Amino acid sequence: MANKDHNTRVPLPNHNSSAEYLQSGIPYVTSSHQIPVDNVVHVSFPTVSRWFIIKNNNTNEDRTLDFGFSENGVKGTETNNFFRLDGKQSSERLEIKTKDVFVKSNHATVSFSLIAGLTSVPASSFPTLTGSLVENSTVVLPGVG
Image 1 (cartoon, rainbow, N blue to C red):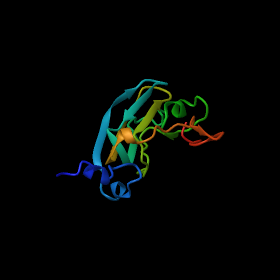
Image 2 (tube, one colour; image 1 turned 180 degrees about the vertical axis):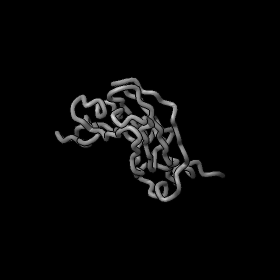
Image 3 (cartoon, rainbow, N blue to C red; image 1 turned 60 degrees about the vertical axis):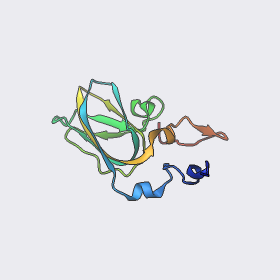
Image 4 (cartoon, rainbow, N blue to C red; image 1 turned 90 degrees about the horizontal axis):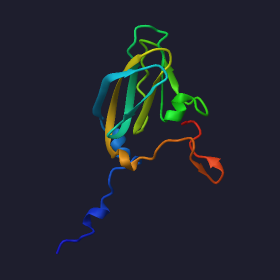
């Protein structure tokens, strides 16, 4: 007789599974976004990232874009929790696990490209990153947004 609990003994991949971050990532690429000034594009990965690189595709250096991990963070609603890229500039390979990246245009319509290496960790099992999370009167993720 088969043991009904057999599958519960093998844990599903989660964001604390180091093996997911030791292997090469599954490719994810997007270059199809044009962002009007002061608008935010939400890139939602199907699974949690292992790393990513973002590039500002504009040739005019003063057409900057901001990116971060919450909409409020890139909008500077409460604090400025974002990283800024000038036109033609790319980020380094960022070894960051996340399920969301938010990108905002600052001065004119901006286009960008994003490449990521994804894990097999379901996005639904990863917490939403927010600087609004408070436990015991302490902000848990203060630099997120």
